[in-house]
Length: 91
Picture 1 (cartoon, rainbow, N blue to C red):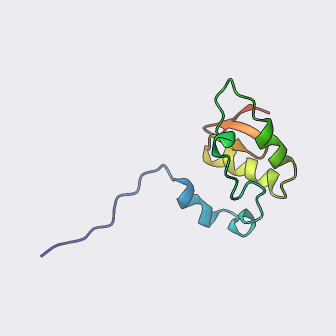
Picture 2 (cartoon, one colour):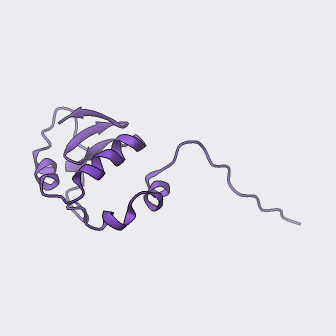
């Protein structure tokens, strides 16, 4: 007899876990959705992130996006700012 158990959840949630509980009705409106320039959203510290900031500037969910990144410890460009584990490191 095989007993199946649920995998143990860690305290650290992933983006996939968080999106359903976030304001997911709005994420489809994100200006960056489907952008093929993936590297622009995760720049090296020495790289400019003007491209991502320009996309974010006209985004209807810019504020919510930045709050999401801050509240969930994200890294990369969110809401027009660059985050490192939820802290703004460049504006």
